[in-house]
Length: 115
Image 1 (tube, rainbow, N blue to C red):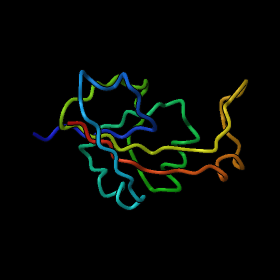
Image 2 (cartoon, one colour):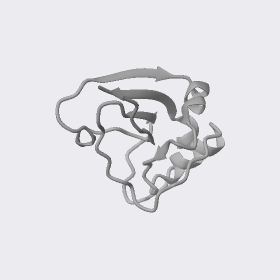
Image 3 (cartoon, helix red, strand yellow):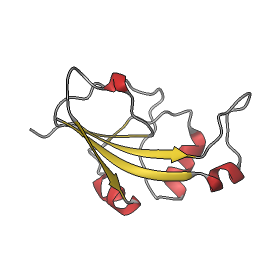
């Protein structure tokens, strides 16, 4: 049974409903772009403006940005494409990363499938 496909910058335990198995597969940016169709639901956090800019300009991914991060309950057959980021400092008393911080960050893509 095919489920929904979502796009996010992160994944958390409270997204999963009940007992389930989760398969994670690393993706190249090209593989991620090929999976992103008009049917993919964007669940990105609109306050992550710097990451949204990287998603659009560095990786050419255009998705709508919801006004508020939607709450999702993943069921068997659902998938989440995650664009993760590493090596960014925690933001304290500011809301944006500098261009230098973004340039030094590492971005990766993964596909999580729930069964």
